[in-house]
Length: 403
Image (cartoon, rainbow, N blue to C red):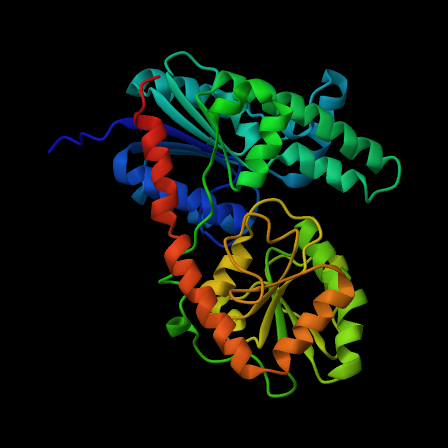
């Protein structure tokens, strides 16, 4: 029987499988949703050797793939040519003549009319003949993230990051002006972009993150990975990502000592792949750095309290949704809670500053019944508000509209 689904081009800056970190969780669920209603041609990059073995798995959702290996160190050097061209460094980092040729070829040969680009830099591949419906999922306003990074750096990195923020915003505005819809993960991010590009406000929308509540369920907690001892605080995430590095460094340096004055036996577990040297250096008798784990769920499910003390955060954090879905009490920074449909003190604890964070952690550790109530309320919130399928239905709507 002939497949009646229309063809579609999907471009991602990182291979969307396996869904084991924040951006890949979103890009994978988008791929899975798109494949329900379209025949998908996927163009992507793979920047980690371990991920190359997963390329064949993409065939179950894709008609064809073009996944280009890149070496981050070499790409960082190559991206410096953006300084000579007056463009954002993120653009040459993800620029590939091979991918550009593949895009032009598959669009022409397969009658592809619709395209979705995941992350701003991938929008540079959408200017090809034949495409009549184009959507960019920016996720966050990345230009604002670079500007935020600049505030915490010394010269020359402060200058370089500030420049990247300015040049990337120029590109984001130009890209958004040429596509049919620009999507962001929260209303706060969308509003920030609307202020930066008011003429494009009517084409800016929100597509929130979701969570697989069946996978991240208390029923899948498994056995505890923690040895017996004092109460456990846990943080999960990709530990080569600067906002996560900053979060755990701040937690260990400023917050944990306050907690230990009351609870000396407390233990902090940092759970996630690719821990940077600065993260590994935090390890001590009561601070544990796991590196890659086979399954993050037992670490989340058996923690007494999950913490998300991010000071640099854009969009809804998947790590927060996953912990809530596992019915854990989560202490989350105000920066991480922007756009989160959870009430302080009911579905989570929203905090500011080292003293405030430590205080709420101690309150929860002292009250098991309160932890249980918050965890149950968090799970209910996720089930009601954060279904991937419900959020991603917006894509089908946008792609079906007449250009």
